[in-house]
Image (cartoon, rainbow, N blue to C red; front, side, top):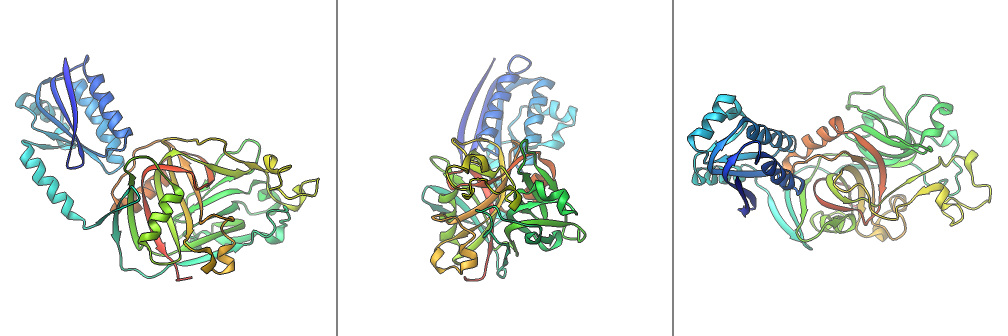
Length: 406
């Protein structure tokens, strides 16, 4: 038998175990650890002072959880294992895979040192806990790609396609495709997001599947095709982790909170976050002149909307990882027309995101760029969506690029 008690100390879960960890009880320990990880915990303390026996099956449960957490820059810390359990860690070679502390006092001292390793500001805004690292960097550059003028009436031609080299587009969003010949790629435009020069897009076909091109800045020979969109480049002036205290935070609330930290009227953001319900839409047909609605009305007219837009009736993709890029405007009236046109009427956020598989992600803002690279390179991606403001998140990390004061 085993007793499991979970408490919180200094903001970290402490899992206190009492009894045996064997083939009978290991599933209970596994269930407890999985629940904590799924709930967003990234650093777990396993208090094993009262564990008087553990089999190799118990070790395997701990190793699986440790591997999950390590991917998200987290870990399991072992506290106070008795000699018999410590000998099992040593004999199996697992001692090298865990930080093991003889007492709570030693563990607390170590964690206090970790907390001082990175200086960051802790802020609470409208029920959102934020940890912010500010960096003294210059402003970034925003570019508008093509035009949305022909979107509503589905009037794009081959001459409207804008070609952008992968090396020149660090982050961005829009309606894009891949290919060398217009007749080849014209039917595959769709919602797109560019993350660290890599393009992910969701073709507007009957059975869409995400296509993508992983690139580095040096990939000068790769080009992306746009009907319209925007891009931005620049260093992150802020790295911010966020977590809702009482209930999930939606995209509109998050952007307003970030706006209280960032000084400019328009700023760009790149983020990775755990979804608590995606309200996302994507186009069903490519808005070329050849596809114009036969009734002469635009694609957003009620008579045409369902045929042209996949619009959510309820949130989807809960617990999936979103990686996205977007723009936020605090006061649209102060933005120039070219920038103001990037936002839908009444909206102050324009954001596209890839919906990736379920996976723990780090909560440390200083690990943002490494985490973004890992998500892009390693996780399967199911779709790319234009996010609506109701899209909800449990927690995540945001990189801010401040733009010229527009």
